[in-house]
Length: 115
Length: 112
Image 1: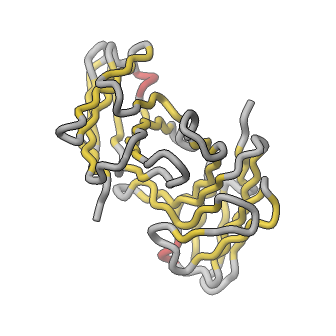
Image 2: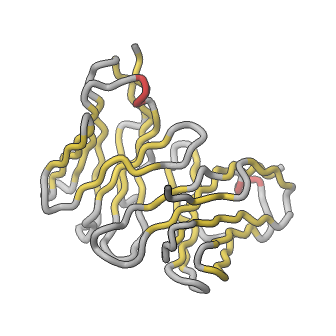
């Protein structure tokens, strides 16, 4: 059974803290993504990566960075957490380049509250 | 600019009825159109997907209808059940390695 695992289901952090959200996939997928989900706004792409040590900005990268040192692991970093970063964060992965399979598999999400 | 517009935002359907959710897209290069289903406390999961070489795809009670000229696609849930109550997202991407672009979601409630 395919699996994307996010290290925490719930996190509470203080304003100004540096926050790390971890994501691990066991499907040997090349592509990994970080989205945030907010009511009424859907899923918005923060960053994505198509290979180890590679990263691309998504639609809302401000205030975030990412790290991909190993193929299976993709970390989202909030450099200095702010209250407007309170949200549900979703990690996803998908299969290598190709026409037939672009399904994205999602983790269960990390609900982050910044106080 | 919102590339994928989804409506309605919320939907209440009687058990046994038909649920219909619509999406419209801007980018004519999109060639992959999935629908994701999300239950509370869970991540989204792929429900059904279509490519523009067909106008309809059916899997059980779920059907995608696709209108390339109108740049629209929709999800139909036949014989809706309370267990279908969830948030549904349409999405689109260009084959290759572009990330999925999601609509804003529709919260479906199926009432008995």
